[in-house]
Image (tube, rainbow, N blue to C red):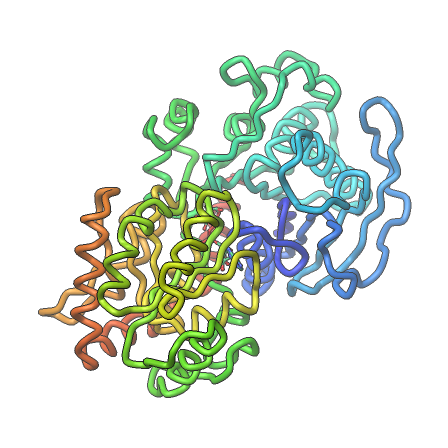
Amino acid sequence: MRVAVLSAEAVPYSKTGGLGDVAGALPKALKQVGVDSLLITPCYLQTKGEYLWHTAIDDLWVHWRGTPFRAKAFYSEANGSPTFLIDAPEYFHRDSIYGYREDHERFAFFNHAALVLLERVGRPPDIVHLNDWHCGFAAVELSAKRRWDAYWQNTRTVFSIHNMAYQGVFGADELWKFGFGAELERNAFMSNGAASAMKAGLETADMLSTVSQRYAQEIQLPENAYGLDWLVRQRADRLIGITNGVDYDVWNPATDPEIPAHFYADDLSGKMQCKRSLLEQFSLPANLERPIFANITRLTAQKGIELMKQVAGEILAAGAYIISLGSGESRYEDFWQRLRDHAPRQVGVYRGYSEPLAHKIEAGADIFMMPSKFEPCGLNQMYSLRYGTVPIVRAVGGLDDTVQNFDLVNGTGNGFKFGPYRADSFLEKIYEALFAYADQDTWRRIQLNGMSEDNSWENAARKYVQLYEWTRN
Ligand code: ADP
Ligand code: GLC
């Protein structure tokens, strides 16, 4: 089976969050289970030159906004699977990956160019796997093309929702510029008087998936789907949840090149060295018996920063450390900065994005906080499990599917999980975790329960193969 995966970001070429991790790892995992997979993603200013192996197509002529537009395509296998990177500096060589007024135009172009590239390559894929709103355009284009273009006749589409909160909404008067002037296509985009690329993908793809089973249920409710719950319900028989995997080639404490000492489920001594060095890196005193609470995230309302703000004082009063790595909304960046100024001997803050530091924190921390308001899947809780860093999460989306509450009587469970989006519910779990941490054997039990789990991509990739097969039939 031949599958082309399209994504706005993919590791190691680009990443702002979990979508990058997933789109980088899935094609590799698909290849390992026998799929002929191909990744297509933009080439950004941020994409390192060393990953661009060679120019595959120097003259990728794309008919765009009424005129011919010359793009290029680089080839690479830096993520472990064949990859084409669409090079169009006008659209993708910018200071950041997202955040521009014309993002919809940038990704509409990316989608169209990717399909031109697939035509140029010569053999149509069986499945085009589209990810998030950035790829909704290709779902519409393919469903239209299939009606009159023999090349695409046997190609089917899968559209994966990674986050319903971002829908790629823009003025419907622009649709004609991107080639979606016909009524049928225009209607696919229309949502509350504007065009929505997410809605277009949901409506026109042959099959839908999302990144956890729980989220597949949640987005059928009005409070979680930002106006599109009706459409998700309408197409629920075509929607499945497949929980993301972890790329253990990248996130593995036994081999991780970013951490100061390696460690294993049966020998955690290296983790203590990682903790010592993490405290040192943040200029915090080396009280190794005190737990480190950590958080690594995009600083947006989704991630429950408000709740962390409300419990931080209690964590500090218990004598623990807090370490935060993140960037995003200034109100949240300011909060972490203020907390550090308030307790400089207990709080470490790095404002920004740092891949190496993310690994060092996963390895050196004791407890990982993820009190998300909503969380389609979440990857850090699964990385934490592998690094013996016990997660405290809110029971939503993929967090609910991957974390089981620790049961002191039976010794089962890999973390702590609370329900209501309230500081007192979160605090209850923080106290439970502190209580468990105080007893070495109990804590070791929880760590081992998490470390021994297999959340590898192989399982998830097999489920995607099954989904692709259903989609073809
Ligand atoms: P989301 O995709 O909603 O941001 P996920 O938990 O799925 O959430 O994935 C987030 C990914 O981004 C993880 O790999 C995490 O380590 C990484 N990440 C987030 N913020 C930062 C940061 N400031 N520095 C380094 N890595 C980060
Ligand atoms: C989104 C979600 C996150 C998920 C990631 C990868 O960014 O917010 O929960 O893990 O996509 O699927």
